[in-house]
Image 1 (cartoon, rainbow, N blue to C red):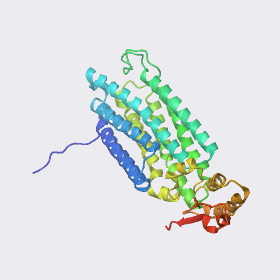
Image 2: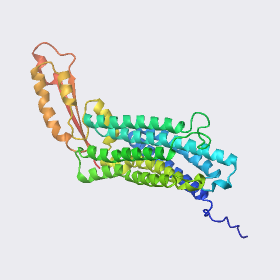
Image 3: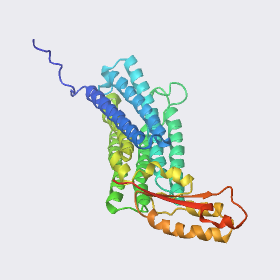
Image 4: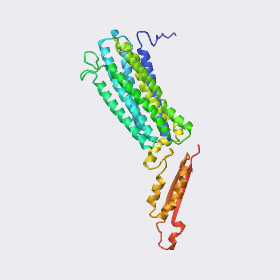
Length: 366
């Protein structure tokens, strides 16, 4: 039984189907990337962190934007404007308005997720202040952009670019794209600054940096988006001439989430020897972890457990000896003191059994 020919997916007068197919493909790829990220991190650390919840928010916004673009395609995206009814045109602009709002917030949460992830792999205060400053800029810039986009054509029926006095939307999206480009460039450069301080092999440093440098693909997508935004500046057939802009925006937001998930996959975590998932805990406990910035845990333990110079001198050799092992990967050291609660005040109290120092070292074999 012969099957009917469904016809070409893309025609010179209708590019909507190809936009819809690519949108759903990118949405599926984005979901798979987030699922892989979450499963990998949960399998290693048995917990999720704040950067994961931010990427969840970005994924939800991405799915919403994908649905909005799909509905936009059903109502005329990729087709000539004179072939659409007034109802279709109104729905088209509503979907376009919604997808733009979701696009801005999507990129905001994705960038904040990457910045928060970078905070977990560095205990250096200068780095953390720098990351916090970039995050504050992203928040303010995204909030301001969201307000401008939300009220682009006034307060009533703001989604309609005709019949109202609207801002120059091309200029707005160009300026937004330039700042988007700058912040993405920062997300590529900052990991290099942080990784440079990590005390590990050069090959592992390269792997860590390349995972974050994958965001160069997002930079390329933003440049393409800016080109298409300005090509359609003076168009009189917006629904037909702006379909590449719609598709490039979807590509940018999908690549942004996918590349934010790459550093959470197993090769990257192994390059950090799983330290990324524990460094925040170690920093809160006053321990330097695997990054070679030193560990103050033993000195704190010594000062808290010792009340005189003799006791301090007993801990200091262990502390200095332990610093050698802290420079080695996959080594952890625990020092504990067991005091005899029934210590007598006679000469028997000086026996070695009255104070036992336990010195335990564990080695992880790759």
